[in-house]
Length: 327
Ligand code: SF4
Ligand code: SF4
Image (tube, rainbow, N blue to C red):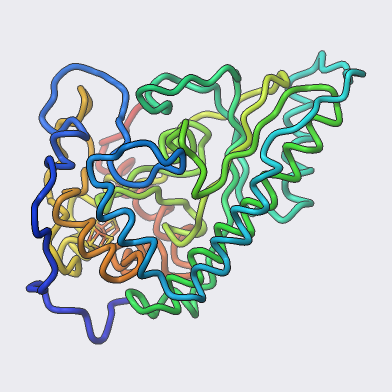
């Protein structure tokens, strides 16, 4: 998929008084490992370097987006709650993980993976006392998303966040009813954690050149929520579906990104070399278009039904060229 009428790269939308570079705050070029800091979205309402743009984003969102946002926020008031004093025994983490995944699927989740929470997935200035994250993914309606960067795609994004939040909230309630602490995280209240690193660790996909997670089945056409818990669970492992093999030669998202925020080279960010989105170029355009999302929808992995065959071919090509990667 490629937008038939992509916006021009030159756009009349810029900061009147540019704040500190989001790339500097994100640690672009920084060699030592450290936690990410909030730059833009942060539901705590605390001071943000790019607060003005964040507030402007909130003010200009169309009603179709706002109504899902309000319903989502209302749902997430139940992200935490009382824990049943009578605890269900959980002596078999493997079996318990299977039961929790089955429950998430019954609630509507299309992707579920479990990981231990690592420091890189927690924002600077925040603490998380839970041991595990249950990462949940739900696909967006592709018929709506092909209209990026128009309003109807933005509405679909927020509709999906609302639906995946419901699953997380209900799964958290289920775990608390079993006597184990659990807290649901959906957007826009994920102030403590970074969903993408957790989801990658939990095996939901790999990071693409466009800076988003790519799943074998849904590409990047899905949204994330999570439940953090201490319920003992067997964890999943990161997957290798061949994302880097394709990203090293594909340029689709780089070409189609209107403000040219994507790069063909991985970059050093807080001590790790990885794909990176230029914050200062992306976010003004992202705000202007109520969430943009062009890069994730033009990605070949997001084409329905294409991912599994693509992954099989990329991995087969790698093994025949004697270029196997280690996990
Ligand atoms: S979301 Fe950002 S990086 Fe992706 S296409 Fe839009 S402006 Fe470019
Ligand atoms: S569009 Fe191409 S380069 Fe960009 S993330 Fe997808 S596969 Fe990688």
